[in-house]
Structures are given as structure tokens and as C-alpha cells.
Length: 140
Length: 486
Image (cartoon, rainbow over all chains, first blue to last red):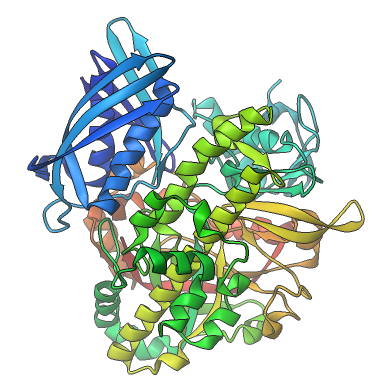
């Protein structure tokens, strides 16, 4: 599992991967957090639980990442550790996740870019052999 | 045969994409040959999308009138290209999320001061440092206004007018703000509670990325009459503020990608890409989206108004300026959709004009323009880089006819953030700019590297092309002295 930032002229393009959809989504979340702050500096002292449903894996990925971005403004929390489970649920897909982090502290977390939104362009969740990939672009 | 092969050059800086596939109107691109070649090369390099294909997409949407337009700073965006303009008939047209984007009414306010460059140049460190401390910038920097949900609803409805009434501004600020700082039709109930929760301490904050506050001086006046109307003269110190609607606007964009995605399916509208989700303008969904973005636009006006107040507080402290002598030249956005009256096929009619990374640029005579500027047209602001120049321009009569009165908004990136961060070091950029007489104040040095002057295209070329096309006229060139980055 892991993630990499791809070349993109104006914004942040990400490819994240893992052995399950949940692992790929957790790495995607680390990539978004890492665009905002230094991941290593965020201590996992507080946790938040997320439950989301969506019509497709792609739209669920967008909702998941957008929820994390919003959390920074609503509760002031930034995260560095994620545990994500994604399951089919009837015609939909459901996500249950926990995120660990702490209140944003500009003096310690090396604040970087604000993520404005998660684009639907370039959005892709796919499986290749045994590896799941989550690809997306964050508008900054 | 791709869209580049189909482009026909019809003037020095004008290209036409004749209708094919689902296009109902032509695409018309105002750009120099080098820009077109750059866009073609980017496509060849495996860029994820093509700005010219995006023009084609816009020309394929229901109810589009005249042509899908791209201005000289065109580059790929989400849905519409950046520098993209599309006008739609009210009865048969659509409101498109990708025609506005996430940062609703992101824009620029320019403030004029009575100071001369020679009066501040020796003291620029102290003045810049105080601005940096006074205007919250960067991720997680909250504003001094903490708003209740009820107060946020009033900001959504009243925009900059609310902020001025609370004591943070002067009456003339509203007169010299587009829409008088208050878009009509805003409806707080069309904005999610999550969007509102994200806003409570963001009014009066700059944000990050390419947003900035610059202390600049007027290096050269290029049109004496218009510059005099705007109160600008050579050597004068001005302050430019580039920011938008902050998290509230971003959340509206994210929410409506989903809402109008469902609406597009309901109305059976073929969507060329997922960012072009839309709803008929007259449908309940379309009206709700427009009411939400009017609220988002008002938050952006309010945000720039509050920052203008903070600039006045800082300049009073460092330069002894009375807040009343720091006037608003103009405040104008570059991501919006508005109902306006324009000539279409020889008749005046109402259309919904989307401008994405493009400003309104009305030429002389329009009633929307402040009376003091009506004889010359209102000013527009073209951002350069922290090391080069910015421009004040204005709209023209030809621009009214050709582009629904639209203008360019900035140079646009040449290098990705990743490449720029590899190529430049933040400390070196700051040091090189210092030698050139420009002080940079930033929380994030990597961000400075990503926004280095060398990461951007040449603003002069974009300005030249807009002038050569007769769309916008240059009034004054501004040089930065101190740059505040998020």
C-alpha cells in the first residue's frame, strides 16, 4: 500500500493503492492529508468515525475525501492514520472508517495547501491483479 | 482528426472550432499561436485533458448561444477550461457546475493609497511584516470574525454590505465592488449546513495556493484617461487582494457536483464529462444552484471586504494613513455565472454568462458599471507572478460584442507544483526576489517554490493577446513590492 503524487499543472493528482478497496481509500486519505500538512507531525491522539454510502466506488471516494477536508474547518482536526472498510450493500457501496489525528496546530504541522475540492475529472477506482488503485485530482 | 486539427486560425489571435459531433455553436479561442501550440504539446505529453476539447464540450451544452469562448489565458480546467466563457439562453439553457467551479467568485480587490513608492521603499520590511501579521493567511489561519449560523446566513444574503454595516469598511467600498458587493437572489436555504459550518471563522482570511496579498506600485500608466478615472497615477502605492469564497464556496461546489449530477440524469442531459453536470436554468434544481452560488459569491465579496479593512488597520499603524484615504479601485470576481443582457444575433436578450477563470469586463456605457467609471468601462485586474507585473485593464466595445464583455484574469501556470518544487527552492526564490526589491512573507516555503515566478507563463503575452484581439485594453502596469502568501 502507498500513494504517489502525479504530475499535474495546477493541482494535486494522486494515485493511491492497497490490497483492498479500503486500504486504497486509506492511502488516498493520507495523500490528501499530506497535501495539507506534514503527515509525520500529526499525532493520532483523537479519532473520528465516518459512515458513508454511495452509488459507485468513485463517488464514495470523493465523498470520503471531501468529508476529511471539511472536518478540518468544522472540528479543526487533521488526520494522519486511517482505517477504512468498504463493502457492497445492495445496489450501493458503504464505507465505515476511523481517522486518527489532532487539532491543527500551524506551529507544529507545517501547514501547506488548502484543498478546495475533490474533482470528478480523472477519478478512477480500479483493480489490477490483486491491487486496488484509487486515482483522483484535488483542486488546491 | 482531433480538435486541434480542426482548429482554423481566422486572425492573428483568433481561432475557430467549427461545429461537429454534438456542438451546436462554434468554439472561438482568442490566443496567440504559442498558446495553441503549448496546449497541443500538453495534449501530446499525455495531459489528462485538453482545453480545446473542453471548449468543444461547452459548445455542446443545451441552450448555448453564439459560441463557446476561450480567452488568451486559456488552459485546462475542470469542466470549462480556465479562461472559458459560455452564455446560455434563459428558457432553453443550463447552469453548469464546471462553468463556475469550487472557488466561487474568487477574484481581486485593488485598493489605492495616497502613498508614493519613494515614501515606503526604505520601510517595506516593516510595512510588509505588519500586513503579514494582520491578514490571516495559510491553512488553518482563522479570521477575527467568529460568525453564528444566523450571521453566516446574512453574509450569504448581503455579502460585503453586511461586513460594511458591521463597521469594517467605508460606504464607497460597495459602490466600487461588482454587484455592489451583494449578488441578488442568494438563498441561504440552498446552501448546506456543512458549508455554513465550515465558514464560521473564515471571513477575512486569504487562504493558500495562488491566493495572495501584494503591496504594489503603479510602474507605468498606459491609458491616462482611464487611469485618471480609476484614481491611479505613476509611482502610486496600491494593494491587491486575490482570494475567494473560502471553504463555504468550496463546499457549495462539492455539494452541487452531486446534486446536479442527479439532476442531469433526471432531465436526460448528455454530459460530456462529469464536471459538466448541470440543470435547466428554469428548473427548481437550476434555480437552487444559482441561489447557492449567489450566496457563495457574496461570501467572497464579504471576505475581500474584511481583508480590505485589515489592510487599512495595518496601513494606519505602519504609515499613519487614515482608513478613509485607502479607497477601493474595484473588486471583481473571475469564477461566476450571472444573468446579463447582451446582443445575441442582433437582438438584446438575457443570457446566463458563465465565466471560469475569466472576469466580467464591461466596456463603456453599461448601467452595471459605477457612474464614476461608466464613460471608460470598469477596471479588471490581471494577476502576474510575485516577481513580474500585474495589469489593470478595461473592457472594450468589441469585447462586449465578441465575448459577452469578458476579460482575462491572469498568467496561468506553466509548470506543475511538483516540477516547480523540484526546480526551485523557496529560500532561493525569496532571496532572488529580495535582490529585485520584492519582499516575500510566507508561512510555507515550499508553497513559495511552487508559486515561483518561473512556474508561471509570461503575463505580458497574455495581455498583448487580449489587446491584439481588441477584447481588453491595458491601463496600467503594477509591480510588486511586498508579497504575502498563505
